[in-house]
Image 1 (cartoon, rainbow, N blue to C red):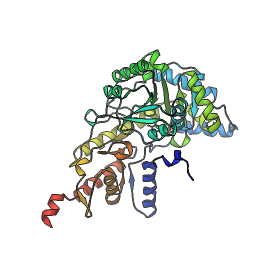
Image 2: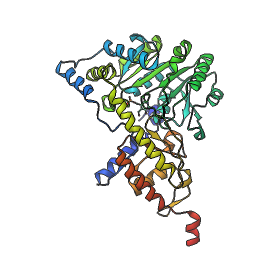
Image 3: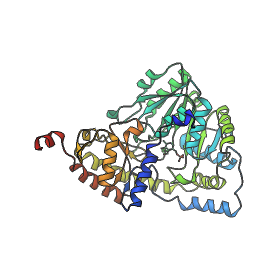
Image 4: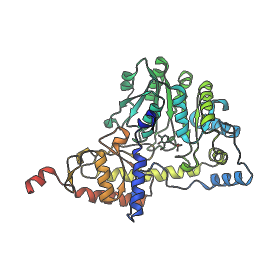
Length: 405
Ligand SMILES: Cc1ncc(COP(=O)(O)O)c(C=O)c1O
C-alpha cells in the first residue's frame, strides 16, 4: 500500500522516545525529559504581544508564498548585522520552520543519483530529507577526540563527481560543536573548487559559549556565498518552537525554486507568526542573552557532573544545548540479568531505572554516545544526574557476576 519513499523512511527515534515518555507520565511516573531539543522558556512577551495585535488587526489572511516583504526585509537586516552577509528580499524565503526551509533546499537542488555529504554525528532528519530527494547521504564521521570538530580533510576525501551538496550544521545538533572560521573557509573553498552547494543550518547560532563566535560560511567570500544556502529560524534562539518559523537565504534562482515548491506544498507561513517574527528580529534582544546565560550555567554544571561520573567520558561542547557523553564503557555490563549492548539499551536502562530520557547516539550515527539536552531547568538537571549516578551503581560487571554465581 505504501510507497517505497515512505517505506524507506526510518522512524524518528526522538519522536518515538517522546511517545514513550508521555506513556510513562500517563502512568504517573515522574520522568525528567532530557531528550527534547527545545528551550524550556516561554516566548518573550513582546513577541507574543505582536502576534495578539496581528489577530486583533485582522492580519489573518494568506500571505505571499515567500513571506511578507516587511519580514524578509527584517531578515536581510539581521543577516547583514549579525552574520555580515548581504541579501535582497528576493533572495529570502520564509518557511514553516527551518525544517521546511531545509527540505525545500534539498528538494530544489538534489535529485536521483546525487550524493550529499553529511558530517556525523548529525541531526536525525537530514538523512531522511536526502533520501526523499532520491539522493544518497554520504556519512563522514567526525572524531570525538577533537570534540566532533569539522574535519575538512575527511570531507575532501568523500567528494566525488556526484557530490551535489554538503549539509552543514554549526553550532551542531547533537554534538554541540562550533566550527572554526578556518575550517569553514577551507570547506567553502572546496565547495567552490568542486562545484557543490553548502546547505548551512545555523538554527543554533545564538547559543555559543566559552567566548566562541558563530561564523556564517556565506560571509567568508562572494564565491562561497554563491554556493551557500543559509537556513535559520526562530525556534531555538527565541523559544518559538511551536510558532513554526524558519527561513532560507541564497542565490535568487535557488530561492525561486524553493518558492515554487513551497507554493504547491504549504504556501505562505502562518500570517500571525510572521508578524511575531518581525518583532522577534527587530525588537529588544535582551531575553536572548538571558536564555543563553541560563543554558551556559546548565552546560557547565552538567559537563562537570558527567566528567566526574564513573565510566563516563564527555567532550566539551561550546554550542547549542546538547552534550554527547561517551557511554561505551557501560556496554557489556548487566542490568536485571540482561547485557547492555548498545546506546539504545543505555537509553532504555536510564528511562526504566532512573526515569530520565536521553536520546541514544545510534539515532545520530554515533553509537558510543547518548545525547543529553540541557534545555531543562537546573533543578531538573541536578535531580536527573543524581538519579543517573545512582542507577549506574546498580550495573553489574559480567566478570564479577560470573564469579559470584
Ligand atoms: C539542527 C536542526 N535544524 C533544524 C531544526 C528544525 O527547526 P524548526 O523548529 O525551525 O523547524 C532542528 C530542530 O530540532 C535542529 O535541531
